[in-house]
Image: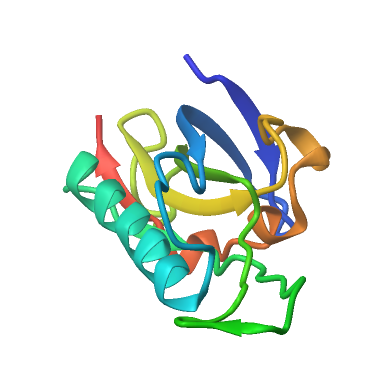
Length: 143
């Protein structure tokens, strides 16, 4: 059972079957958001996705980065990612046309960052998520 459906710009419909959200800077005890910290957070979220779903390809949507204060501290200027880190498992019909549509599906794990707690749904999902190149990134599997 899917949590929601999203329509990609390609016209393909994908289903969200698992969604994990966390605070981008939750647990940050000292320091400030900067490029080195953010790079670790982004690569760490991708690593979590690869470990949680080892048989499924993972795609990272590069996050937007804002620079509210150009004053450089010890690790460079303040750089802020969107406040919610997301890891979603998506599935759809098979990519390969020769596969039996009853027995096969395609899957992709997507990692992205967003400003709020909205669940991506329909055409209201973020443009970056709706732009995922499913046919190039997802992998077919047998039920």
